[in-house]
Length: 77
Image (cartoon, rainbow, N blue to C red; front, side, top):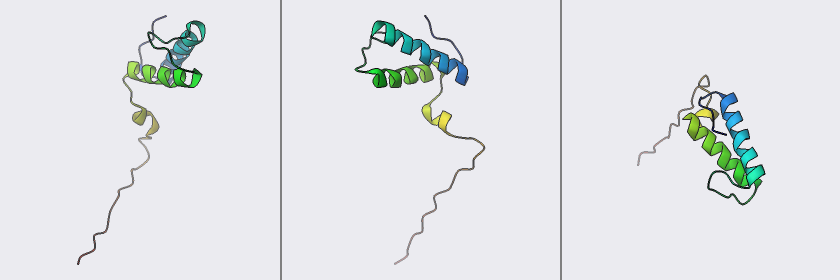
């Protein structure tokens, strides 16, 4: 079954489920044969995120949270 288009969490989740069902039923995801379920899940997440055009960093960052600035003190000699 082809993966769905879209950037929403629901679409990404459905694509991951689709890929994991493929792994469970056929033992592979596309032409790849992950070693175990954990590796297959990581690959399914990566494929789904790429399909959505979203990076892992974008999903973990909360835009309403202000970023901390890293100010370093320089000692003068």
